[in-house]
Length: 309
Image (cartoon, rainbow, N blue to C red):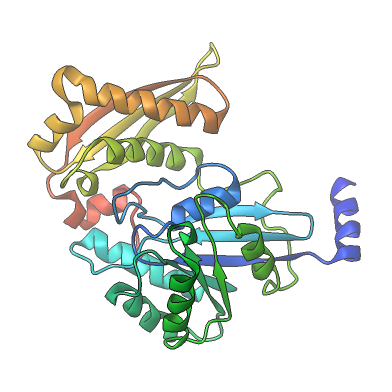
């Protein structure tokens, strides 16, 4: 009966839905934008490039529309099989969507990486592309206008929307503009669902985010996190057992830290975000294991959830 009432209401007001990809160079704010839109952290944020490795699906639902966002890995020149996976994943997303948001950092200006992405966008037919100019809080109006002219000369964008993903400036305008390009369609996900990824995936990403924040040099790109056990115990506490994979023994020592200090800090910071995500107390247990050169081993990449169709 409830579903029938919903269908009846839909018939009166017309519901629109669709998929929208967020593409751009590494570290321009793609994850920040999606987290702001969704209202909860589902994609990790870091000041280090190439931190998003999978297409993250975020679901935004209002009374009249549902937008399923794909936060893609940053498009960059790959240096490993993992890098190849990330770039192919980002580009393939452009074939699956009603619109694409090309996110740029206006404070950095037009570069070779942006030109490369525009070349990829030019190969995609019948998909409207928005130029979303992020970090407008960091530039003056004159610089913003000059940047708009530069990009307009390179591609015929369907819309140009300046925003600040971090502060939320103009994000509602962006959502309104996206709504104009959505076809009539069904509600793919329940109104209270914010991602189609299982909780284990998001939990693993939250652990990886804390390692990115607390380490430097080669460590951030040499780690992967896998949830081996996640269950609710009799006392209501969620037990999580996670393995952090690194490529070398020396990296294992860095992740653990002196007398286990760094690993404890990772666990403490990750547990806070995980408890917010799950809405319950958690017990997080972490281990560090070495998988030699895992980023170039197809079998290991597949086991860790990195696959290209």
